[in-house]
Image (cartoon, rainbow, N blue to C red; front, side, top):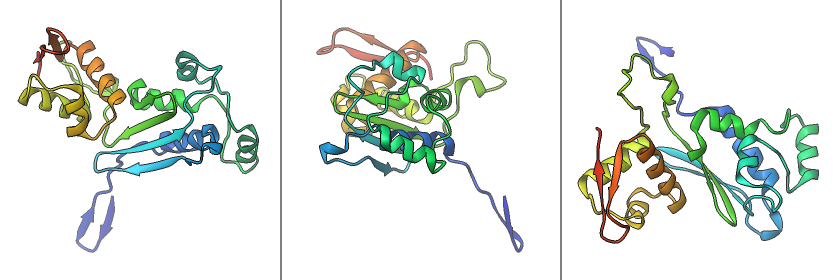
Length: 199
């Protein structure tokens, strides 16, 4: 909190800086620079997205990636980062991001890896005084629930268009909401509809 005269300005921490730092360093080290698309950071009103080009290394699967096994595409760049003190150790960046934002923070595509860091994210295990029947959802999940509540027949394509998130990220959010039993799907993909069970 900063005091200026008789006025007080409250500074609010929107996101975990260490997670952002790791995501950006990983994007630089793992981007396939020969593709001509450098890593990028996009800032929105409710989130930051860090995008790297090239997808996962050929000999690294998603489970290994989530565990923090590091196989940098640019080993020389990694050494430079290490010598400059930007990288203290390898293998802890991804688990750190997952511990703060969950696996849904990662949208792993064939040619890109997109890391989404939402603002004001509340980890489910950090919520106190909740009953056993109460399930915590974050701001982004709540937004998707609201879209579904207003249109039970909304498609994934329409959710992508309305929210601005990628197809893969929307699917992860829907999976998370179904696992938390917040929503259910009745019927098939073409003629089915969504049911909001809670909230």
